[in-house]
Amino acid sequence: MKTLKVIKIGGNIIDDHEALHQFLIDFSSIEDPKILVHGGGKLATKLAEQLHVEVKMVDGRRITDHATLDIITMVYAGKINKNLVAKLQANHCNAVGFTGADGNTIVSKKRPVTPIDYGYAGDVIKVNREVLELLLDNGVTPVFSAITHDQKGQLLNTNADTIASELAIAFASTYNVELYYCFEKNGVLRDVDDESSVIAHIDSKSYPQLVSEGVIFEGMLPKLNNCFYAIERDVKKVCIGKSQMLFNANAKHTTITS
Image (cartoon, rainbow, N blue to C red; front, side, top):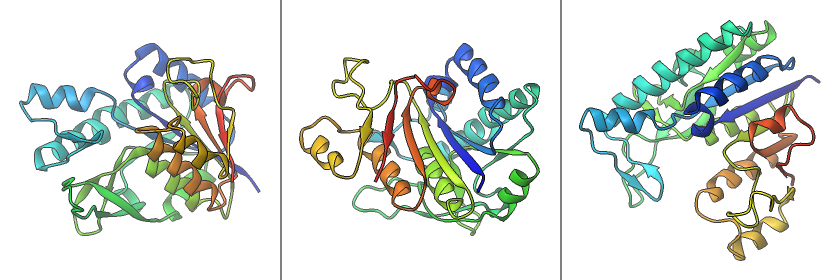
């Protein structure tokens, strides 16, 4: 069975020109079939401020009203996604940019009001593999922005970590899937102020204890929940850390297992 790498990058790479340049060179050199998932970095917030659209956040999550969805679509699916695809092409990596609406690849439902109304935020209900399999089988790399659709004509802002997890799960029956979350830290840290305090391995037994001790909290909770969700659904390997973990076996990172 072939290996498929699903790799998610965030603002720490997208917002740093040099880091992005080097990442895309390295990413292009990966010979296994691969899917890239990206967030939006700071650009959507910057554009919203320029257009005098209020940025509303609750518990670190963006409230997506009509105006915000327009901005996110322009930035995520437009500027960022197409620039990534162009730069991958320059590195001889044939790539195609996606939202979930393209090829009907990722279908979501609008998040219910419980009690917070997140607006046009989507929760994934289905991944359709057919178009993606055709591309992967022909050496083409899908590049996903953090936007899905509801099959009724509505685009939905969707968490990029969740998209990466759902894509990994969708291919777990036909590939040995490895899921990588690349962010600004060396991995999950025991002490958030100490980059050397990486927890090398977290499993389903140690995770609840780390949460109860307050070691894992706030923004890391949904990321790790996505990790365990994937592992429990036959994704072979899930890792969190800086992007160097993809290309350097000795780079510090956190591995998640069942």
